[in-house]
Image 1 (cartoon, rainbow, N blue to C red):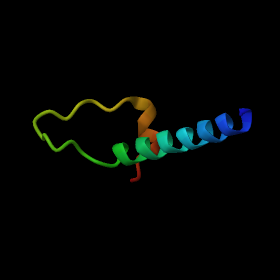
Image 2: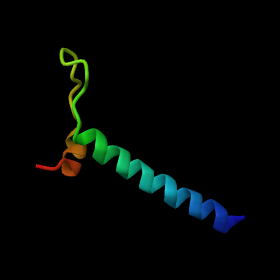
Image 3: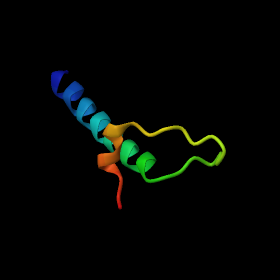
Length: 47
C-alpha cells in the first residue's frame, strides 16, 4: 500500500511541475485581465 501511495505522489508532483511550466509559458485568453505572475514561477518560463 505504501508503494502505491508513493507512486501516486510522484506522479502528482510531476503533473504539478508540468502544469506550472505550461501555465508560465501561456497567456490568459482574457487579454484585459492578465493576472500577475508570482516571482517563483518565472524560473519555469522559457525565454
